[in-house]
Figure 1 (tube, rainbow, N blue to C red):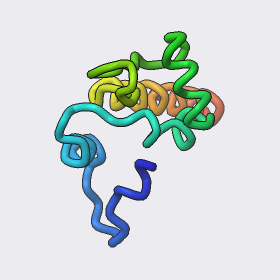
Figure 2 (figure 1 turned 180 degrees about the vertical axis):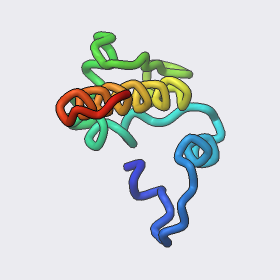
Figure 3 (figure 1 turned 45 degrees about the horizontal axis):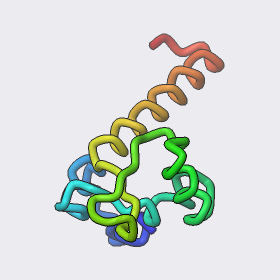
Figure 4 (figure 1 turned 180 degrees about the horizontal axis):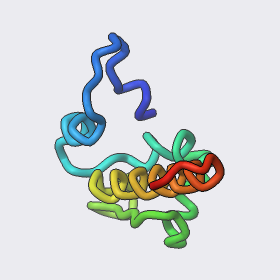
Length: 98
């Protein structure tokens, strides 16, 4: 799981810098993010990846037995988009100018 790889000492590191450091290959195993970010089991995430039904592209970099992975850049874009949408909704409901 991705959260278990983050520093727990309270030292704030921008996550956009941390993810590439944690995943220098440029890809994140789908198993690391399935439950926490897609709210589904690893098995469900693999099935959806095979059907191209997840909100970001997934691929296997080797044979059919290779693990499903997502691009670090695609994952960052997804988190940024969801955060921006949540911010817009919050601003709308709280009368805060954008």
